[in-house]
Structures are given as structure tokens and as C-alpha cells.
Length: 250
Image (cartoon, rainbow, N blue to C red; front, side):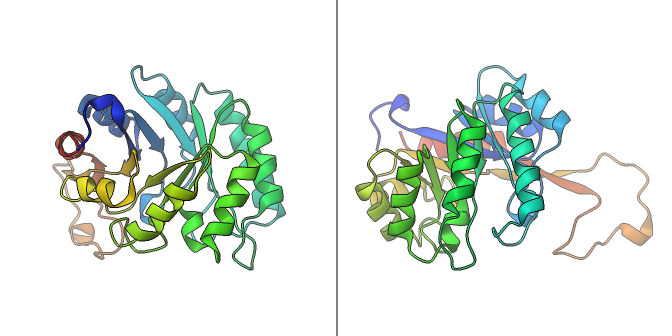
């Protein structure tokens, strides 16, 4: 597929410092640090950000998203996001990840420019809010004009393989932005996604289930609702899953 490891980059969606460590061990180039993975990623805690940025040998980009749901933010949420960006910039992170839309499905260009200015000199990645925009090619042009460095997208489909055709169009049309497929990327399909899209950076979680070490388990919470939080297990980036994805591109 690729001639050498330096021909492509792997970004891991990491929900904890332990996931950052796992991503580094697996050979990933970068993490997108976030909380609230079931909601699609929200801003992690200050402690998580600081400890993750102290990990050597891997780049840390931090997501700025005040809540789950849509990407239409009011004035209060925008102030919160700008303050978070300021904190992230001062934390030693290597980049900021954000995304925002207007009610009509267009990029909220004015607020994006504010975020980019607040993040400077850190590069900005526009996350999968892009997959909810009304006109993806026009949105790409707006991101180019604003100075976004990277775009994370599933090609406006439920996963990156299904959205490969649009991702390929975005890769071809991009002038300065790195278009990075994400969502559903794994060792089983990453080489095919690379072939179909022409992308050279890939975003994946590689999550595995880590069972709780709790000995006492309260019977009331032993069986949680399946779509809710499991009180006796949590998700963490899996070294072998990430390592397999890297190997699949070589």
C-alpha cells in the first residue's frame, strides 16, 4: 500500500491519558483527546488535558465541544469554547479540534475565524460537524479560506468506507487542507479506504472493552441499559487494534 511508515499518519481518538499511552505504544502519530465518546466527543477535563500533553512521543490535539447534540452554538457556548481554546493553547497541546454550523447547515465562518485566531499558533482541525453541513464542497472552500489545517470526515455517511466517494472528491479538491477519513476505520478496511480516497491521514479509535477490577458489584447496577453507561467496564484505546491498522497500510 504505502512504501514506508512515514508516508501516512494515524490519529487515534483517545478518551483518557491511558488511551494516549496506548496510542503511543501502538505507533500512532497523534491523538484527538476527548471526553464523552458516546456523544461523539466533548471537551476533556483540565487534568486530562494537562496529563496527556505531558506524555512524550506523540502529538496531542484536543477537541473543543461543550456538549453533545448539534453544532449550532449560542453566545454562552461560544464564550465557553473560546476560553477552552485559550486553556488548551497554554497547556502544551499541538492542536485544537472544533466545528460549528449555522442553522441552515453552512459553516459558522465568523465563529470559526474567532476560534482559529484564539488557537494561533496551534493548527485547527475541523471535526465531523462537517458531515452535517448542507453543501460539502462549498464548506471545504470556506475551511480553506479560514485557514483550517485538517478536516475529519466520514464523507457525510455513517462510516468512512461508505463515504469514500465524497472523501475522494474532497481530497482531490483540497488545496491546503489535509482531508482525514474517520468513523468506522479499522485494520479490516483502512487499506481499502486509503485506496478509494487517496487520503494519507486516518482517524480511528481502536477501542477495546476493559473490564472493571471491582470485586464488589452492587446487584442493582450489575446489568445497565445496553445503550447507556456500563458501570463495570469502560472503553480504552486498544494497542493491538491500532497496531493492526498501522500494519494494514504497509
